[in-house]
Amino acid sequence: MATVVVVGGGWAGCAAAIAAKKAGAPEVILLERTDMLLGTGLVGGIMRNNGRFTATEESYALGGGDLFDAVDETARHKGIEFPGHKHVTLYDVAKIEPAVRRKLQKYGVQYQLSARVRDITVDGNRIKSVIVDNDDEVYGDVFVETTGTAGPQGNCSKYGNGCAMCIYRCPTFGPRISIAARAGVKERMGQKADGTFGAMSGSCKLHKESLDEHIVAELNAKGVVVVPIPEELRKSEGLSIKACQQYALKEFAENIILLDTGHAKLMSPFYPLDKLRQIPGFANARFEDPYSGGIGNSMRYMALSPRNNALKVDGVDNLFCGGEKAGLLVGHTEAIVTGTLAGHNAARSLAKKEALTLPDTLAIGDAIAHVRERMETEEGLRLKYTFSGAQYFKRMLEKNLYTTDVSAVRERVNKAGLADVYAKPVM
Image 1 (cartoon, rainbow, N blue to C red):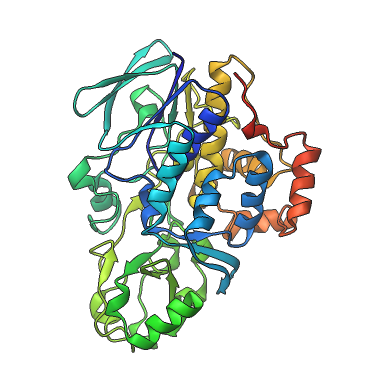
Image 2 (image 1 turned 45 degrees about the vertical axis):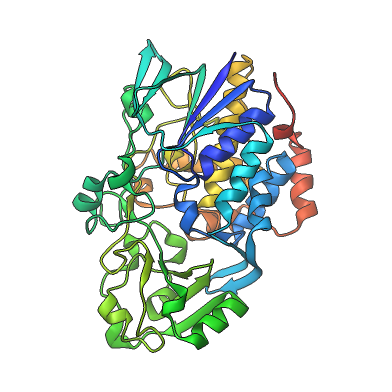
């Protein structure tokens, strides 16, 4: 039986697995290193902000909206605003993972948890199999890598502030390895503005019940709370360390900005606990993720795969990539849309059909091509790209790609001849 093997069960991996199945792949196996799917999606929650609205609706028009359905089904708030971001949906981080499992089950995706891939076998320029920690060997015809770019602990110590005990849980489940690197691909590393490697995850989560009651009430009701920080309690490090540059605005330096994702999502990479507890309303504050959120956060963008605009990895004939592996694309929406294309093209590869490349008349296609080009430059490796802000959202505005007009998005996809392309079997 022809098989697509997806390695990495984050947003991108789940999207790739569903897309491969919808495209007609007879068997799709998803291998996840930990005991839960979604990776950082387990502590994320922000969707549809700014240009992500457009990318989401493009996905629906392309026939790839299944995981966005899961988001809507678990949403705590829709259509809210916070500094620099409009028409935001916040999903419930406690409910999203089971909702995604149900989507995988709907399409008959086989997923294995606690299945860390530790090695591969190859035949020339093709991957034959992956080997998991219990020595099981999983054979496939086409592979999709969505392992992310964070971990192991040593990278957080070398390039960050040490292991912050984040949702990746490297000490428990073992470190991520790069399939592409094991296949001999020379990968790139993202950089901070000062040229040092990596970028720190951009937010923490506070135990909601550790906050003052009036903050909790407002957070539950409105989805967002903004609390001014006394000047003497503001953090000294710059906003440039954040992976999520769309939130590197002065409002995030001068205020505590909380979002309601079930936890109280604190829009800062970390916050020294002694300072945080001096801010009115936070005297009893406690971190939920990472547990050591007073000292640091996970370091990411350590292993970026060179690839083409169909998301096939350079130098390996049967390997595609999605999510952070596909470049300096930040966010859950970005992971879903790249994972979907990668999984769809994996099925096309099984069927020996030409891979699909999305045109630059679509925001998704333009972003994939633009990031590939920018990653070839030293300057480009120091930036992060997202539909929701910073450099790429500016590009969306300049190219008139951003819109909240759903009918206009559908017309754009129809004009490209790609309506429901992800929903049509290719095998």
